[in-house]
Image (tube, rainbow, N blue to C red; front, side, top):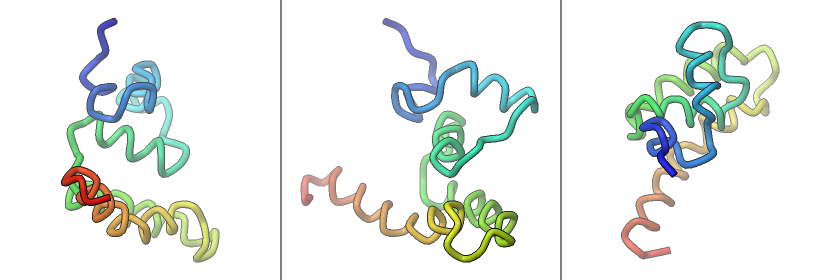
Length: 93
């Protein structure tokens, strides 16, 4: 089975190509942090330095929801997740 580059970058099944296409066309926006990260990864933005500004902006845009909203939580957890992934890739987990 062939998979598009976006699926390979974001993880198989993380972001359907139809969703990617609709986001690119401006028909929809990612609805949650997980979908946003999957979309950014599908666009080859996979490093912490790539993702951080996007999640920071989303957290600011959703600040009216309170400090414990899912966007703020995803932004706050990003450095820990990056470190965890780094250890898993090295086999330290």
